[in-house]
Length: 75
Image (cartoon, rainbow, N blue to C red):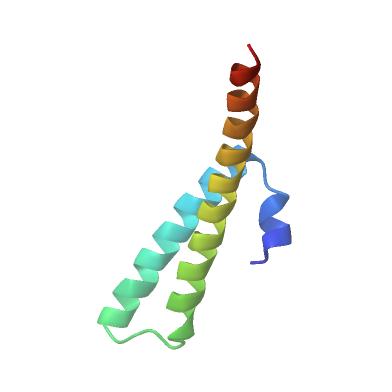
């Protein structure tokens, strides 16, 4: 998943995708433990996708918070 795809998501879609990816990572880890995982790079990819979503969520929170704090300092 690319950042451009993630940025196109709404806030609700980001939360849903984050839950889906965390569940997917859990499933991959379970397969790795039972040695049924065919592609070990899937775990790394899932972890990075989760990090990308969390980064985008944090950037949106910071941007929204930055607007609020600058308005509060004006009053």
